[in-house]
Amino acid sequence: MKILVVGSGGREHTIVWKIAQSPKVDKIYCAPGNAGIAELAECVSIDVMDKESMVKFAKDNAIDLVMVAPDDPLAAGMVDAMEAEGIRAFGPRANAAIIEASKAFSKELMKKYNIPTAAYEIFTDSAEAISYLEKGTFPAVIKADGLALGKGVIIAQNLDEAKAAVHDMIDGGKFGKSGSRVVIEQFLTGPEVSVLAFTDGKTVKPMVSAQDHKRAYDNDEGLNTGGMGTFSPSRLYDAAKEEECMKNIFLPTIKAMQAEGRPFKGVLYFGLMMTADGVKVIEYNCRFGDPETQVVLPRLKTDLVEIMEAVIDERLDEIEIEWADNAAVCVVMASGGYPVSYEKGYEISGIEDANAMDNVIVFHAGTKLVDGKYTNAGGRVLGVTAVDENLDKAIKRAYEGVSKISWKDEFHRNDIGIKKY
Image (cartoon, rainbow, N blue to C red):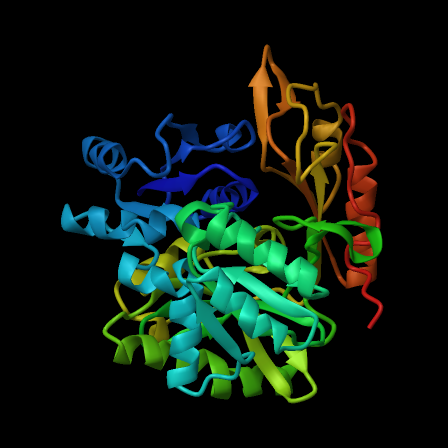
């Protein structure tokens, strides 16, 4: 088989790495890819949003399966465009990807189908939003309705912060069209857990659980980022919680999307919060999470290509998905100044040394190969993943891998996998 993976980050490197393990695969392309992906796949310089060029490449190269990884091209209908030309594609169509592309849509869906989530209201007028906030309690959660690279959620501690967030989004155009409509939510408390699930629109098969660290610095301090590290499994998500989620959240969501005429096929990400009133949905994503993928896929024993084909053919109920009884930890190494501003082009040393370690894999997120040397080319640069028999050993191993890698102004958190609850 020839497979094309759409995307360029650490998630895509992990997906390509996993696909490369399948005996079914002869050739992998990745568009646009990155320096690490180039070791496993042929990288093609096509923008992830360029549907026309992506479809043409798939046709010209007789691609057997296209895996669309990022949210933007999914929401823009990349899968629809492939299918219209008879090309098999993995991922939701645009009318199902809206579950992530519009926070308002997902909140209304949960309300209509009694899926547990935080109380909320939706606004397009800043004055009305502020009037609502003036009568509410704090903290309050303010979300841009559309896609905002993981940065469209503000937890306002007081009215002044809330007003600033509303003005920035609705009046200031901080997130463009994505912020022209905002969702104001009740602030829930409790630990968060991420569960990704394969689904063919009828059957849902959850993956192993994970927990992400969003804040830039140790002890969950600093700005929210795309994710500074993650671990799997969650120490809090047990068989009883999975049963609760399957009954109250996972199956109802798949059935709701089907009932709305938007069957969801691909990977559905459930951002969950364990509250005193049970597990509630914080958010949905319409694809593999980043960096959750970097700890979930290394634990997958079943051939990923077989799973993707079963999803496309709507026969997910026919295959058994097996997971290793172990643990994985991913520490993100970032450019100094991320997530605000940072310098690029610094030479990175030690990647080969870390990769040479047993049970350590370095996934590239934002790298470039210049004169045969890796340089940093983004905010999140590398994800150092370690797999071991338990979390404590995996944490230790991951940081041993991190210690071998360096570049100017690099920073990372030192507490990934260690949660206080």
